[in-house]
Length: 300
Figure 1 (tube, rainbow, N blue to C red):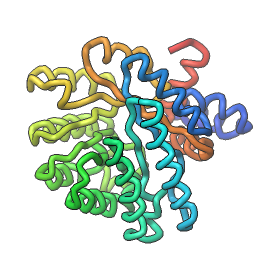
Figure 2 (figure 1 turned 90 degrees about the vertical axis):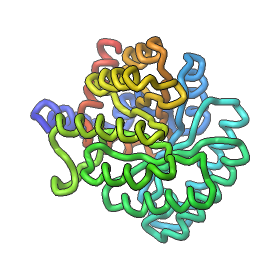
Figure 3 (figure 1 turned 120 degrees about the horizontal axis):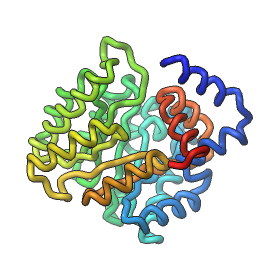
Figure 4 (figure 1 turned 60 degrees about the vertical axis):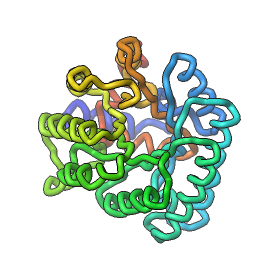
């Protein structure tokens, strides 16, 4: 992290919560489900797709996990009730992955049973490296039990991701590909930005060559331009892929991607744990703070 980013992060961490919330609300819908419904509705009106995420992770009790499941069930019911073009994103540590894997699986299955009834899609997010094996194992188990409308996430900074793609391709997964936000040891993760970009495009092409659907989750101009080129060279259809971006980040770039004829999905987090999420995002990706500051003071 460079000096400027450290200074910005230090400033944000010293601010009172109400002030931080002003920054956070640039890319968090709010604390309530109604806030997320409002934001997704506005996104849909601009011909953008959405993904709702109930903030929270690493719960320590079964009661907290079951409460998270109920919140996510409410999201699925609300998507259906309000006719929203939106998916649901979940984190397994919120559903009890670190408490008991079988308990976590039963919670996810309970949620997917509801999603199946509505024909909704659910994305299992990827967390830090301590959960990667368990996350992919649970995903593969769900697919083996007939759950088709469920996807997973792979991170281009992880050295293992190429092998993970190769292992997943036979089941034709729906993969969200991102750079990776978690700070991991160099032994298991790439650190150089150029190397991460190259690996991202390598994985991107592997996924598409394997006839799998891919969500191109990035705000990186180089990666977006490279993806454009690959999409043209491979003569892909809109149904083969989508771009994905965070709510409140680089809206002009977002609009350009849509104007260029590509589908784009906006990731919309909400919930009462907005502060912890915001601090983690700012710490892991100080560029986020720059996006917010630029948008607040100069417009996006």
